[in-house]
Length: 135
Length: 135
DNA sequence: TATCATATTTGTAATCGTTACAAAATTACA
DNA sequence: TGTAATTTTGTAACGATTACAAATATGATA
Image (cartoon, rainbow over all chains, first blue to last red):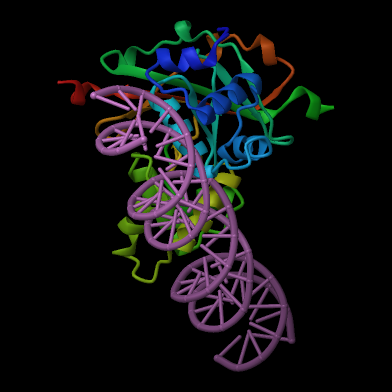
């Protein structure tokens, strides 16, 4: 998905496009490395000196509630965020700590056992060693 | 997997079977509801009055390191533990908060894009509303 | 059995990510 | 311009987890 006008995109999703919100969302679509709150804050506070970490928390929570970002819980001590809301997998390298995206077709997965359940979110992630760190 | 002798099972996995460790592991195999540290502690401290929560943390961390339990991170504020180490899916109901197990065959999932990665752990979980809460 | 070294458990304090909250700043609108 | 509503900010509080050192238990050896 291409988002040309971030402010308009936020508006379309029921979010008032304040300066901070636009900048946080822009950061997410330009840096698809699944940042933590701390990463987003540290990257943006240089350009927005008045930025508060609480604002980053509030903003990401709002985005998640409005379903324009995904919350990724792989490690118990770091919550990460992803502006790509399509169903896809994540691979976390245990060595370099990087999180990779990969396409995954879950339509072939048999979910008979929970066919009467309403599914709202899919999460599929792997842990291991990435190609680079193998060498 | 059936574990008849917990102490022996721990020994076989390089863990000295102390009283606390045996009791914690027994709790996990008898209560497959993916408990948190707090749940394990509260359930056992009645029978083991001297039990410390730190011991529960240490013990579960040791079990995870020795790969006899799985760490489940669905919510960012609650780490859960599972003595079933086979690859299987988890479903968390957003209403009753219960976590269900379900079998899932991931052999059909195409992982071409990361075929050069070493995969150590598979995690597949869904969120939604369970059958009971739908009614 | 007594002794000693090692491993485990325990309780407290510290840490860290996150949330609560109220004041300050900004925005929207009459 | 004035006023209400919304958003941002900074600080304090919270809760889960970890660090750490003392106490306890275990195991081997003599």
